[in-house]
Length: 131
Image (tube, rainbow, N blue to C red; front, top):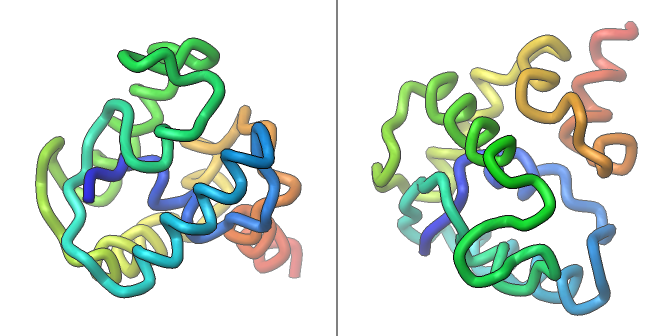
């Protein structure tokens, strides 16, 4: 399964919010498939999750453009992975948890995300740092 690198964070924080009902249902289905620990290929372009996004024009993200590609590259850099590398899903998730430990780390990718206040991953790190 092909997964955008920054979606490794989204997968961990998804709480049922999204761009549309179709997107939300699709995201939940993809996450359920990922919980079976398939091999994933990390990419910096449209992936399985993007399929149901209303901002997907079939070639790129029309809402975030190059900024979403930069998010992917930041995640790849922080987990020391390359575009096109393959991982078991659990290994990739564990690695992102280990590398994204502080709000500074997370804000490098999620700083402008509209979903961050509903994101379990983002809010969990935020709460931990506030203690």
